[in-house]
Image (cartoon, rainbow, N blue to C red; front, top):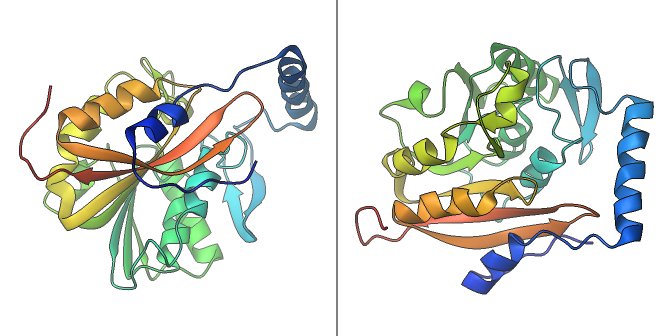
Length: 251
């Protein structure tokens, strides 16, 4: 199914969070795809793998989130073009992983700061920035969420967050699991946006997307659907978060 871009509306947001139905044939296809990934090795994350995202080369190193296998990173990156990023924009890419979104953003923006809590991801993203000749526009910083950019503000914040709640078991699992990422992101986002700034996040029906969006609404953000895509057993959506301007958290 092609990507769908739509205007802001609450029904559109609810629709994007609704898991796709799984008739018997679709469920069988989903299990077959999982078996196929195991057979060809794409279920493994702790390996070196050279991928291509929209024609751009991307090296994925051990313990780093692969943006093509779970599809979320590649889907968010695909939305980052000249329609949404101004030439003078300053971008923050949280949880950069392989650096895929930082690279796509840096093709249009003046400056991108890419952050990750996994040291291996920072090294991997640095390789990919050089591989795509964008190292002069991408600044890489190690740290947790907004901590490496304490006093800085940006025109656009990008985030492909962990979808599952719970304590991560290792560095690789931090890309999948967190006990409080939605709450902390929502509470700190506004202080890192320039006037007129916004955030783009990608969420999946694989996790509790509704809970994540409830947190950002509580902290005064309007939510709209930028793009969505449906797969056999999952629906992805990119949401745009903008401050409502009415001040303070909302319960």
